[in-house]
Length: 77
Image 1 (cartoon, rainbow, N blue to C red):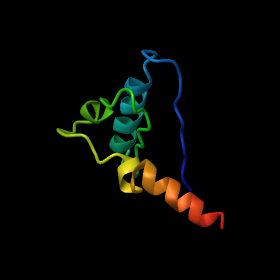
Image 2 (image 1 turned 60 degrees about the horizontal axis):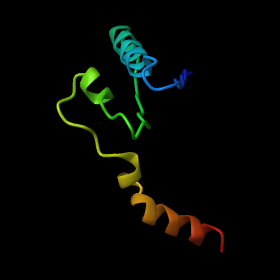
Image 3 (image 1 turned 120 degrees about the vertical axis):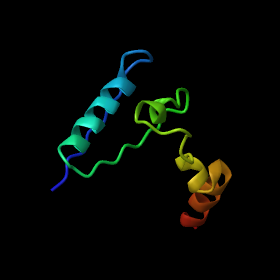
């Protein structure tokens, strides 16, 4: 059984700090952990988690905005 946690709030409210602390604690407890950062305006969470370079954005993995729009159009026909 898994736990899913969503963190949201105003800019500067500490969301990234909270998420990084939760992720580090979960790892310390040897829990499988996945962090998904959907904040396009502040992409610094990867640094707080100890990574040197940012991950590939989810939008790019899905084919970008144009690719997603095409997939959505194709699904409605």
